[in-house]
Image (cartoon, rainbow, N blue to C red; front, side, top):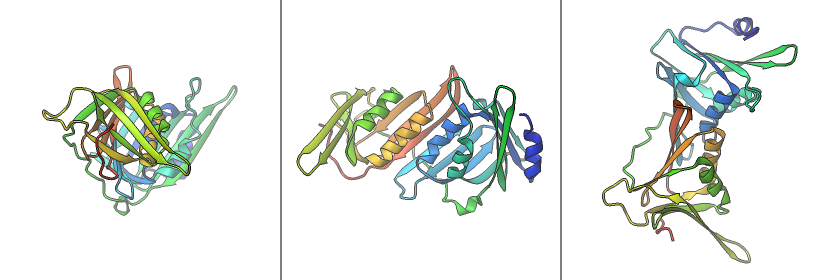
Length: 287
């Protein structure tokens, strides 16, 4: 990157263990959309397997776990340790990355230079006769001051549906209520919302798609749970912004909802992960 080396060293030298990542707006901005819909701060861990983060929102309702492979980036190097753990303000990092364009005809180069104390975000914007290079220095957060990373359980759930990402996100957008009942009915994944208004009651029922073969040997018939729409909308927004290419939805009777996602470029996995959403209240079967 033109001028980035001198700018980086102008701010500060890496202090000990460090991480260097070469990427672009089209990769790093969608990736960062996944955790920022739930949390403002998180621990990021870098090792030979890539970038990893797990976080839970302050109300302990939604969780996210992400693994970004080294192949997701044009360059990825961890120096001086088996792994590097930092705490970051995701809102500030997202803001710094927002100047990196990610359109069809523009994909600005981004370099991240990270150590325990600070993260340098360097972005190049190419114009007709010049390149504008910008570097932000963000102070990292002491990892111990951030909530402990949660363990996202791998639950035995009754049903699974492999869905088109856009179709699922649109279905979530169509539900006008504060809560949604998500469940299996006659082999289909159904989203159902009931809203009580001043003059009328509105019900919305969406058939999202076919349910795959039951995961468990004795699945609960019409298994469903009720979930908060505010969280589900945020997760759908994260999936859409992250440009995920595959989505597997898993659920059971009064169990958390699991949204397993993956983004591929041809046959290469760039990143993968899971959202988990706790059920809101007790419910009956989808109708």
